[in-house]
Length: 577
Ligand SMILES: Nc1ncnc2c1ncn2[C@@H]1O[C@H](COP(=O)(O)OP(=O)(O)OP(=O)(O)O)[C@@H](O)[C@H]1O
Ligand SMILES: [Mg+2]
Image (tube, rainbow, N blue to C red; front, side, top):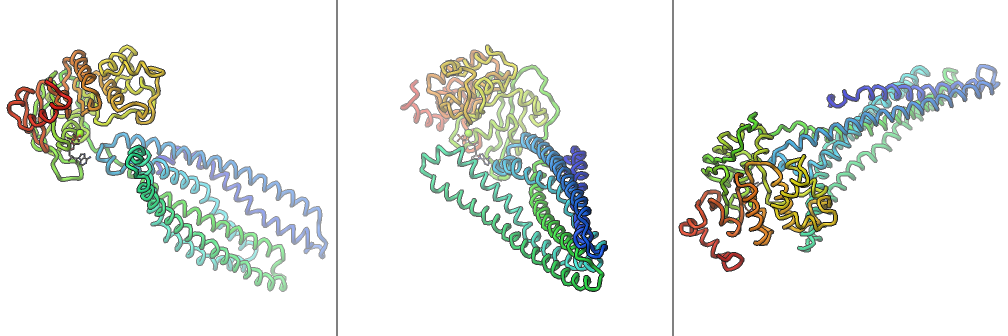
């Protein structure tokens, strides 16, 4: 935490100084009040003759002190918030940077909902903790210590009475905080859950409506929300009951002071003004204690949140990159050497002993039943995941020895699920080449068979893409994703079932344009349709994580039963030889 605090420590110091001034003003007031009552009103030293001049002078001084105190309070508030806000801002930036560097398994482990809560709500809690700490800690302790000190100065007996009540008050406070502490951690975990559900349900609202699952989802949300409310109420109840107990304790102190004061006034050891000042100090002390409770409440909650933020900030990128920049001539050879793979956290191998060499410029198609490991296989090439056994070499160098940029620059991947972002079409496409000219963007879109439909949109390449590309059809989204990859000057192109939503004619034009424009690139095409793969140099049939067959369309038609079955199941429908 110090790393963040030290950067804005000067603001915290200024805030503390103004706070010291503010509280000092509060602490001086009762002394003036006691003098006004004893000398100005009761005229104790002038045979009962009051002094109106003294009342006016001291009254004006008191008003001046209040104004000065208020000004210092405002300045303190300003610097406190500048400290808290800036620290929160830095933490958010750092968390975001860490999340961007996380590997897929790390993101899966945290969960999207939890990461969102950590970067938003948890950081706000820590921000509050910092603000409360700078503002509340000094105010509370000065108010409490000052009140006790001035009480002793006024009258030793009054001071002792307050001091005796102190252990009871502290004991009550510690008990409540001890009860509430675990609830704060629980509260943040419940917030994670709610954010997770919200995220899933809002992004999947269409399918929820299509399957008429609204009621079920409402119940699921209600359950989580009820749990959160229950915890919040639980915490509230603890602190709601604490306040009256504290108040009662302090008023017992006030009554004892009054009793002891009345005896002392008779013997001339105390004056009515002293009793008044003592009661004001007691109420100030009570205010200090109640603030301390609030402060500890914020500290408890902030500490629980800080622990969760630390988990993000301390997460180390799991995929340790090498330092090879990939500065060989463009080639694009890929070699799988005895590769086996299980997803992190599972022990079931989804790929088993894969041996495969893809030559530069070769087009390899991968077919296989759903769940056979096609996506898993191609995910290992750009190192979305690391192999469990064996190794993958690109242009003769293990992918683990490449620096991240060097490796990813060589590869353009079009994922199975098209991801578009809410910005213009042009900005969505230039990810692969930020300095691309409009001409280059158009020719990439042309290969992807997207140029034509982009031109028919209202603002052409400047048309805004809605969240997750919701204003485009499935096939249009796929073509935009392909255009994005086409713009990247990569030696290896990987298509993960990314033409599945295109009609056969558009798909065929796309592959023809692709072969013409990028004859030297190595292409890996994952597809379910024979029509998408039949022109590939080699077709690989994957069966439950192993290579069942490998060859050209004609070879497989003669030698591979699975391929023949797929062919015959499709020939009656869309694909005619
Ligand atoms: N993130 C993950 N964690 C754990 N297991 C996973 C994960 N993703 C996929 N799997 C499992 O790995 C196996 C292979 O999945 P993969 O996504 O590679 O299949 P696929 O051949 O691409 O299927 P499809 O044609 O449906 O896209 C499946 O059994 C799947 O359940
Ligand atoms: Mg897949």
